[in-house]
Length: 266
Ligand SMILES: NC(=O)c1ccc[n+]([C@@H]2O[C@H](COP(=O)([O-])OP(=O)(O)OC[C@H]3O[C@@H](n4cnc5c(N)ncnc54)[C@H](OP(=O)(O)O)[C@@H]3O)[C@@H](O)[C@H]2O)c1
Image (cartoon, rainbow, N blue to C red; front, side, top):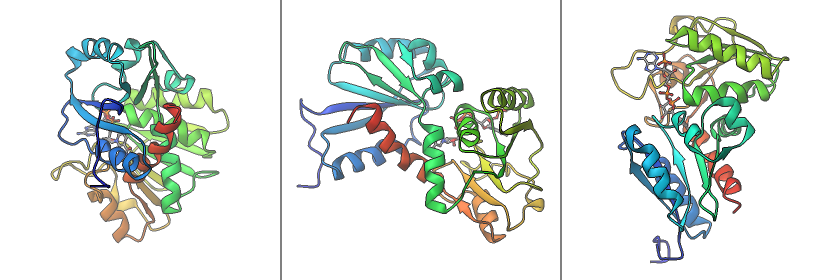
């Protein structure tokens, strides 16, 4: 029984807020890591609809054994205005994915997605400094990843998104914060790029189209994914079969474990 979780009144409780909730795997990863390192922390997914987010946050403010909560689709942007404060990077990105509950009940948010993504690339040997990056997607996670790519020293960042206005806005915001990175909104054509990053949700479902013009992808381009499930998306399989170096989305989440501990002062 030594390696079984023992949840008691002393255990710090974390939640993962999502809607739908069935795809959430981050709770399992965090529980495994907390257990392995001997931390008395337990994480549970919570299925929370957008209309109830404010009520749930107010309840959490009053739950004294809650240390914090993760936030995922569709709450990352909406939650910002409901918190008592955020880090500067979360404010810049405009979305939050982890919240610390202070002892007095105040809720303080950060966005760990971008730093987790950049740290996770190291597992695959993919680098960003001085490289030209094409990012597919400009959603909640995509915004965090774009700022982090520029901050990691990419020479150029092109953003492609179904909603092109969101891509253009994200590119101009990242450019303003990172004058050394040449930012633009672009097509989903990998020609001329060193790294392609998929931050869209295309690839989660078997019948999704590919997010990229695959015919123009060659072996010199690295392809990274932020989708965790499935681990090998059709994009990654296609990139691997073309000889590209690939980066798995699971490493982005794994790296966030260290960042969650820092946010929780553990
Ligand atoms: N590995 C990790 O640690 C990690 C962390 C966070 C998220 N994720 C994963 O990242 C993915 C995106 O999450 P998110 O929070 O950023 O979601 P989101 O805010 O809803 O953004 C979704 C993105 O996908 C695009 N998209 C969705 N359906 C599309 C379609 N049919 N055709 C073209 N583009 C489409 C959206 O484009 P529009 O703007 O045009 O709608 C947007 O860019 C999810 O799979 C999530 O599980 C992984």
